[in-house]
Image 1 (tube, rainbow, N blue to C red):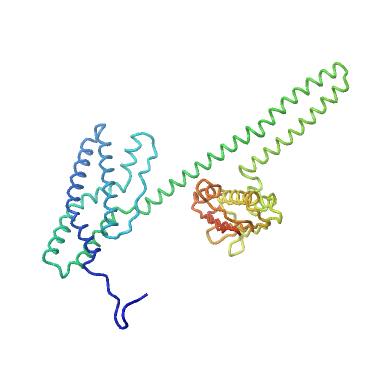
Image 2: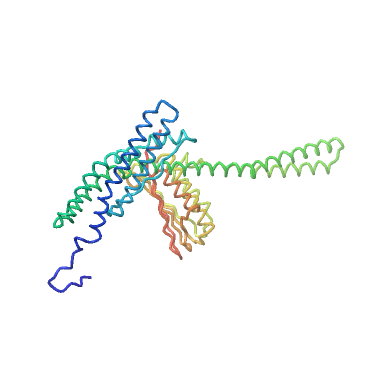
Amino acid sequence: MNDAPPGRRPAAPPLYGATMWRQVQHLLLNLPLGVGAFVFTVVTLAAGLGLSITVIGMPLLAGGLAGCRALGSLARRRARTGLGLDLPDPGPVVVSRPGRAGWVIAVLTDWLNWRCALYAFLLLPWGVLSFALTLVLLIVGWPVLPWAMRFLGTVDGMLIGSLLAPGALTERVKELEEDRGAVVDTAAADLRRIERDLHDGAQARLVALAMDLGLAKEKLADSVEDSDAEGVQAAAKMVGAAHGEVKLALQELRDLARGIHPAVLTDRGLDAALSAVAARCTVPGGVRVNVDLSRPDGTVQRPDSAVEGIAYFTVSELLTNISKHSGARTASVEAWRAGDRLMVVVQDDGTGGAAAYPGSGLAGLGERVGAVDGVFVVDSPPGGPTEVTVELPWRTRSR
């Protein structure tokens, strides 16, 4: 609301206010910090390069670069406080090899560390210039001091932003490293689940089956030798029970194979696979499925098999959650192609309140989708309905 009297503009922020004095303080501190940063960088990098043929040279050089990275962090904090710049902090150095040697290699190959070292070199001459100009203006340049501080602060911010802000490539590498970690964790969890299912399910049944068949064989042999009709009947019953165990073991193996990668998805595509998984959902009113993967010219092309698999397992997990937790009566699954993206939407009329909190099943699905540059959005207000939107890159199917 404008509370100024009619015909008069609202008062502008004071030229000699707190913002200007923060800029003054920032620019005056450039000189002492520049001297310290220059001395540290020259000494550590020169010593590291000079001793590079020895065992301490590379670790010393890496230590110097790590110190320059710390100076860069200090410069970004100063820029946020003194210049009002919003500069994101980069993530930590990604160490892909174990041990001290892995850390040294990671530090030496991180491009941001070298940019921080360059900033430490340039801060000294810039610090001398900005300190001198600011000091002179404080003494004799009061009529132009606010504008001069804005100009010098802008130049300082450009120097910091160009050298110390994390680049798009750096952020992309960090994102890919996080996605790779999520994929590895998911794959490890799937392998543990498969091992557990085999050990506790089909394997246990097959062991029991072998024991039952062994007992039936002995019983049958003894009964035939003794002409014992009742023994033969008992052996026949044992064989019949073993046959039933065989059927159960085969069904468990089929379910396990379908959990790894369903044959219907490979043979007939996403439409048939989603219809099959929807048919197994126990929602009372059933699940409506609508899949349209046609292009604008009417031709149908399947996405990459990895994308198909992620879409299938995401829908499968979501429908399982709906059956167990939502209390829904009906649900629907829609999938369609939108340009170079595969869109999937799963809805239900349940009680709502679903959230992808850390460690939850929905968070795991989000990580799996994000690993291929996908988007996973949950909209589930208390009382429902719930809608989960999945957006995946189409990616042309490999031949």
